[in-house]
Image (cartoon, rainbow, N blue to C red; front, side):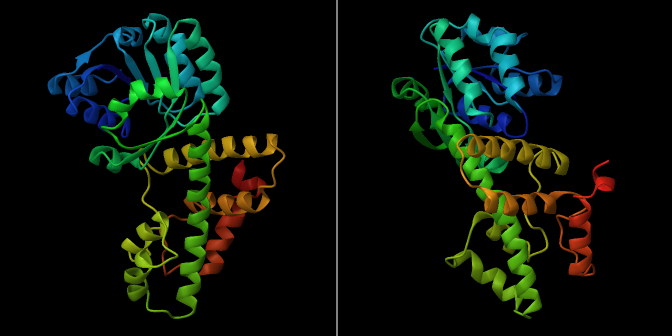
Length: 301
């Protein structure tokens, strides 16, 4: 299949490499010269403008947010340049309504659109172990599946927007688990539990989670690895995603107060004031003071 890819960052680049490695013909657009050179060396065709990807049967988009997705597909003319029967896939985590709106635009051009956000991060992308959460028409999805299969586990969740709904639920779990993992290990310290033994035990126990497993692997010094792009990028990304979650549950009249509180605590641990790395030299009262400061007018000014 002839595949176009735009959004070749820390996660998008290894995704595109997996597509190329699976034998698909790959066209890419990138602004950075070093990225263009890298993919040209791998054998991909580098186009000079996003609309150049319109020659592809499938165009994959892995940019940061809703506005960038819309700019790429509509503002830069990709959907307009695609032939009828083509498909655009949104791998970015965005609002489901953004995907539905763009799906309607794509339909006017005879093009299908699926939302296919991914979970796992850059390391999983390089290993082909991402989870691809897909929403969209089943027939359109099947046209994309051979390409998505090169990236990892592919799950079709329902109509357009369903992949985004699943992704924001996943990210809410992630944020809640950060806060709970930090607190439970703090309690283990206060109970004088052998933390080295606990770090070996927990990943195989029923209370294991991805966050706790990562925390245990660092001997409970790093709560979670900072995602690609650094701490500020991680915070911005998670806050964006949780904002989508809050809007969706609020619009549905659902009670999410407990989830909101727990996720908010997890996010605060990622802020500079909350410390990502647990330093035994800093006592718990100091950590809580720093976290409380994040809510103060002075801290936010």
